[in-house]
Image 1 (tube, rainbow, N blue to C red):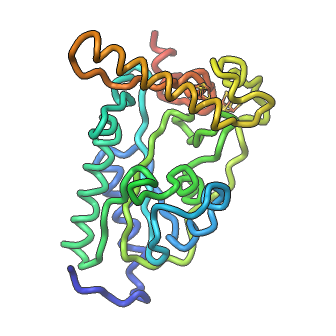
Image 2 (cartoon, rainbow, N blue to C red):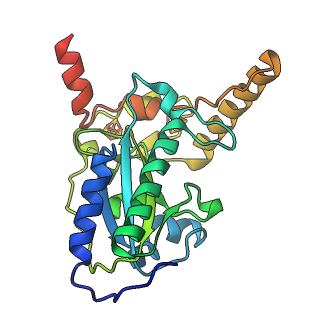
Length: 246
Ligand code: SF4
Ligand code: SF4
């Protein structure tokens, strides 16, 4: 365990700035941070109960990775291995944690993806870190990338008093809501997300993958529904640029 430095170290903000730059250099599309204490009362924790992550000192660094619709395999879930996109993110969070320990003697570690494994409510953390806002489709909509961003985080022994968050007006206010009409489960009816309905579709996706495995004898990743993600027109600069070149 590296030696713990003073929590009043004036360099914490500077170290954080470097950590964010490192995240972007490693391939993250976006990165930000939130003091861990703010996660204690985040909306999901209030709605779903407190579970998972239980460290409320220090800072959580949130990394986001754009999941290009042209590379759908980044989002395919494999039992015991997560998704390719999540593995990419984990390599980044692990590298940043190692760098913080070695370079600055600060304790730091990757945070598991799922709350059941000790993770945080990642979407809440991303919003609190100022990376985006929650859309009608219950996904974090990120400037430039829309809802096609997946998140992972690491914890660092850095004490920062506040986030770098900025107010982001919701793109949903002026939107005709294709996510609502396209959802195969009617899970966004009236602009309210129904977890129960959406989970039914997730279960069906898993069963479909299991049936494929039984039929083929080969591992079949779960290709979860992304309809409400893919139809969302908000803030998707890379795709607009690509379409403009065609
Ligand atoms: S499709 Fe429109 S309403 Fe739905 S999440 Fe995207 S911006 Fe919001
Ligand atoms: S993931 Fe699929 S089922 Fe769930 S809300 Fe989005 S479109 Fe509906």
